[in-house]
Image (cartoon, rainbow, N blue to C red):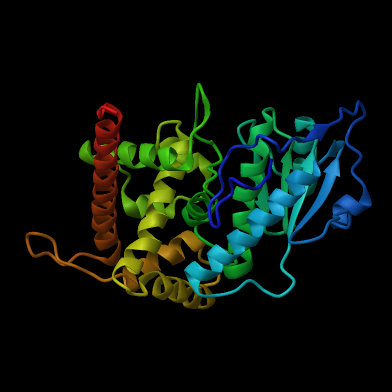
Length: 335
């Protein structure tokens, strides 16, 4: 079986059949070497370089990661009209044991790892740190999701928290919490459908977050509070906002996203001590086209963006409902 047959040009299918990873189980504690400290232990050809600890990657996995990264880089470049720097690579550090993943993260980055945290990308260390995963199918989509963070870092440097996660979900189609039912991973289309329908229910029930508050959230704990323990909803929201941010402009052939990101770059240079979440919110207020409310009140850029996002959710949910109706008709049609 071709290990990357189900990987689209800009999307990743989660099916990992035929991509197996071989793991060993060392009994000794983590040996935190000087090479690990200095990041000198990565090996490999192509975009992806690997440092593994007690764990051996199957060659098919290595090939699939490189293939996916190549297309993800192309997708990012096409969407934003800018390129990654020459010599760009993505470095993956993979541990066999979760405890070693925790220990390394604490020693090198002073980062405490929650059991729900499958992996993380460090802008400082320019590496993705993870472990083999309790369920093998999680590893490839996790590596690709985190690879999107590395690509965005190479293109833009610091970005708002929601955009870091939302863009990785949008480009990689690999949310950190991963859509799954009793039959296994959901197809990408069904995952998207479920998201739009869920968000539309939230919109109708006035449960969507305040846009300004969401834009300024800068950590998972904020999402945990905002969505009553459902951090995954923070990913859903970010994914849908990024979809609106990128695709709404494409529909009418305007450059709102590019203008907002250019303004963010300009503001970041003028206000280097301001967090990227504040910078992005200010950029939307400045550059997003402003409208008036039904009662004639002038809206801010963020308020206009929020109204457009709500309409975008309604539009996409309506499309999915029509697809469901057509699928039922096809299913009930006599042969």
